[in-house]
Image (cartoon, rainbow, N blue to C red; front, side, top):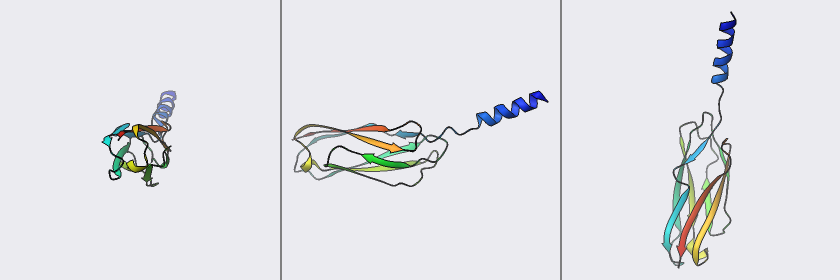
Length: 122
């Protein structure tokens, strides 16, 4: 009887959800060499929920007015993909080496994620 009870407790504990976890296709986006006269650069950055409960991206922050990010606040189910649409306007970026870190806030257990956006602006 004790063995049956212990086995059921261990099984219940082992099946407890771990939470959502976000994994990006890359953490560095290199736009290469750009001129301030170039068109806006649009990047679709995909991510996957590698956890076992739904994931929601709640906010994405950037420190530059030259970069905007669009994302859905819909649930991304386990093993499904989501996308961040990142737009960078070279005409608003400073000349020289350009490095910005995007902060991605979500319901993931692995915390705030950082994505680096870089370019050389001429």
